[in-house]
Image (cartoon, rainbow, N blue to C red; front, side):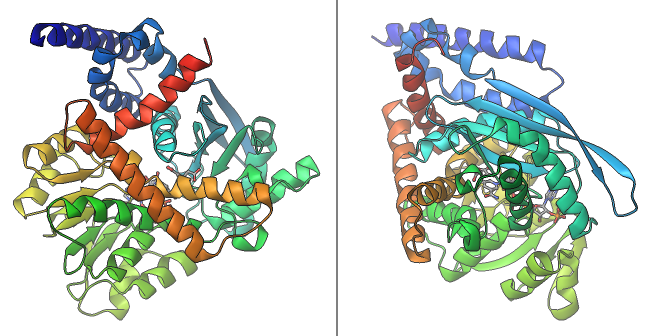
Length: 457
Ligand code: NDP
Ligand code: 2IT
């Protein structure tokens, strides 16, 4: 029996090696994409060992290949009358369980590798939410920093003038991500409606509630991440109450992770932006952070101007040297490397909850597991944002609005159920307590079965 099992595991590992190595050969220049694929593929070994029919159906070869990659030119006029050119992307990765769904990122670092890693993750994350949504991601190398509102509007209009051909409420439904918040979503939505000559709120999520957005969508990713970590902490009889927390970033996800952690009694002592981090031993004053980042679109260093107890340090990495019980990386990919993870461990961290997408390197994750740090992986822990996006789509289809409390309650139920499903899948496939493997397996199984049931797609 033991031999049979190890044989099937060997076959599964060889299959995964083959698929991964072929991909590596083709996409050696796409490190973020390969990193995301590697993390998922190897955690599926026990699934392929138990279900060889998935290998026979070439499921991995199919799922790593996006259904469609759209790349396009975005020409727009700046405030000086000069024509600027950026590149736009939409990777429509998988529509096996629903219309393509996923955010848009506007950041100068955006390239095909980053959009593909995000799109690939999104397939499994969306599946975990239990809602009927496929996986996608898009964006542009456009840098919103320092641009006027009028420039942002013209860029968004130019971007949507091309993107509208590929999306629709039952086809592909974008939303926000880094650099894309309610302001950008409004401009994108306005242009879509203008081109289509129709009012189709279900085409994009993250809209302001005054024109079809869901209440609590803004809060959903951050709140959802804290709800997930709250469940995980129960395993070690810990809670946010009285815990010291470090949250990286100061954007949408970070702000509402801080808010919910504080509501649950945590002391959040640090947050950051791409220039540096603030440390406030008294606990971060969130109203000030919101005023600086949401209202003024300013820099986090301005915080110390009104809070003399707090300090500002240039550079992002140092934030992980601050001792904490719970670390919530909520800024960007690969922000915690092996060294940062070791420092967190040395300083006594008990749990890491990923609000951002892929914020920990593969080596950092190894450090968490080697030191029994509870680990809430991104595709489960930050699924609350897209889950409430799907609730926004449902409200738009029904032409009605749920209250903030109704949406927040549904979000809480969804996050608890994602947690339970990850625990269950990990146990069922022989990796009890490993939420990373649990999330990947639970997310994968639903998509895999849908692909099998739909024939060769
Ligand atoms: P925002 O643009 O609102 O905020 C991003 C924050 O991270 C800012 O504080 C930004 O600093 C900082 N940041 C961005 N890039 C870097 C970088 N290269 N190095 C250091 N800091 C950086 O984005 P979101 O809050 O929406 O997204 C944050 C993360 O959460 C991303 O990984 C995103 O993919 C993920 N996510 C977002 C969801 C959502 O609903 N919005 C849902 C699920 C995941 P600065 O102001 O200086 O740019
Ligand atoms: O990474 C993510 O899940 C998001 N940026 C949100 C996607 C969405 O469609 O709400």
